[in-house]
Length: 213
Image 1: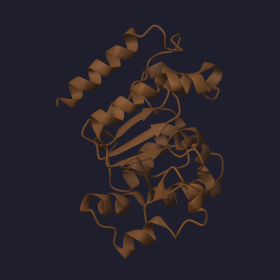
Image 2: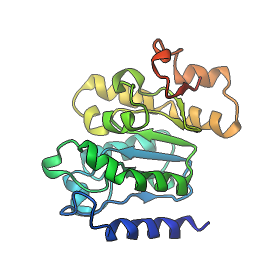
Image 3: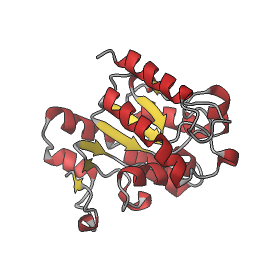
């Protein structure tokens, strides 16, 4: 399958769908490597993203670029998108019906790219994959959801609000290379288990997923 072509066709499909909400805002489809092993997913575009038509290009985006580089990766080698593909007014939280409307397109986007790891950024993106998760508790922990590995992280914009949040964000991000190495090799060695974190104290409360440790 020509993934680049498939993504362009999907983007065109969204553009042509007049029934989608938030059509007064610019489409921010996503960008990066169509063969990416890691896919970062936020909740919705903000002001700067709406202006440029690209995901994560404001202050939060600059931090995301920085932490991606800090673990030896490059932005162009991963794939970055959002659940909702257009900016909600005044940067408000996306509504349930907006998330539901764009859900088929995100599902197809994930199917086309086929990432080994999905990194939801922030509460809304995390709860999209793990409805019972709490981002402050579960960030940096790898879960197995629907055959894929999902590693929640704080939203970069949230990390910018305080030193504690920033430190948590950076420390959680450092775990990603080890998790990816374990996924690609098909085995999680004790060192990788240690990198992911201790056994989840409330894992039985996550019936929709299996803690990947």
